[in-house]
Image 1 (cartoon, rainbow, N blue to C red):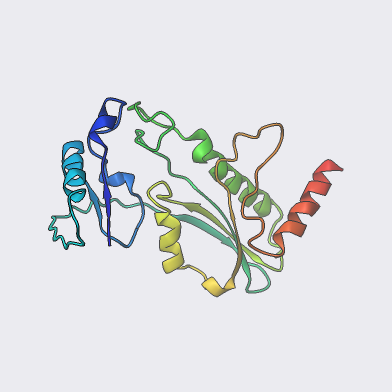
Image 2: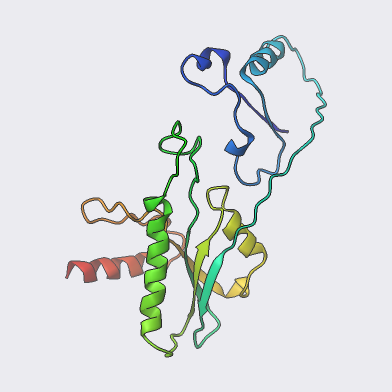
Length: 212
């Protein structure tokens, strides 16, 4: 089982890329992924249409692993108990752009003010406010996290889950702050509110406080 990616020859005239970049498939799929140039993709499709199969195909490839070093930035405020809440956001963006950019044809620095300098700023502000309260501890610890390589497929946070700096069983909630810089009509969108029974009452309480 695998995935073959390509652009139909007829789509080239509409601005499609001749070859789908391998980097367009971020993260770890766990299955083989093959990208073909448009002409080869068209030839493959024409060939497959004549099959009465199934047939077996054998492919060989030399895989070039591109690597880079990045860092998650973490800060832990211990609580009086063992439970921990993670408050995080990714600090990477798209560099010089690419297919996933809002301006895919622009080869220039993409600053990422909203995605996700906004979330990173909120993480730092929350950490600063917590620090201003002094050494008094709450019942739960708070792990402030700025994740690396999110745009490459959540690589920074995935690495942390596999190599945790605190026992994963002690993490009772994760608050992810992503693209919070465009607040339309004074509203903030909160996703995944139903993933824990405690979230909805907490959000309702905050909403009532803000409206008071």
